[in-house]
Length: 116
Image (cartoon, rainbow, N blue to C red):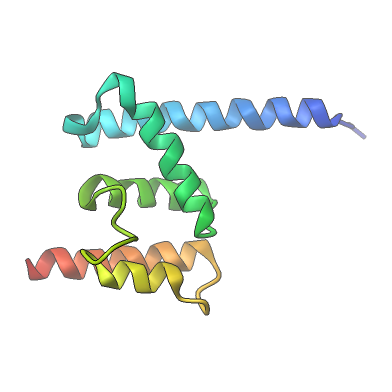
């Protein structure tokens, strides 16, 4: 049986986090080139991941979708008055699962964008 120390697990986790950020940088550069400013893209991704985690959005695919929503609607789309449907979804206490929350956000955002 393979046993890893806490420091080894932390190193693996940090490496995975960095690799995900690099993939997200490439994703944004490809899909949202107007947002791909080198000085701020990593900071944008890291802060958006922290926001997503605060809404219990922790799976990479869900975080990627959340980042996409932030790219389209603005980083603060889940707060304030501009998108009340988003505020309702992220603050809805019965939606505890991050994947369900992202799915609801994507559906509502698509509806909103179609209505505009």
